[in-house]
Image (cartoon, rainbow, N blue to C red; front, side, top):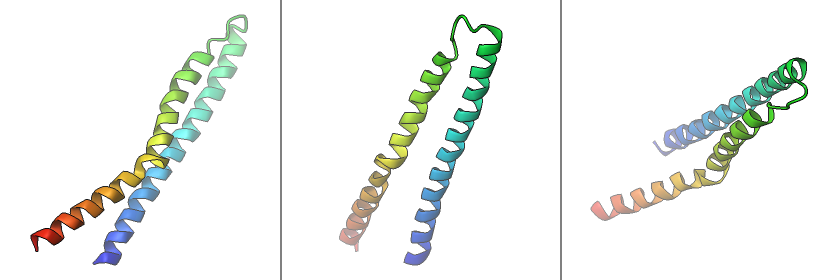
Length: 88
């Protein structure tokens, strides 16, 4: 039972990391296209920086949430296990 739970937790973490990788890849591809479009249509005004910055902020918080605060679920699990032991 414990092995299956560990596998499910690991699978959840891998899915979250894979989701971030997809987010990062799309961010790079789309912003490269926006830079090309901007430089070909109106090189006098570099507007591509605005979606790059805005989306970059979202990507930053995605990374922070994934790599910094993902430990919170382990803490929550320990507290739940502790409370369950009290009930038994």
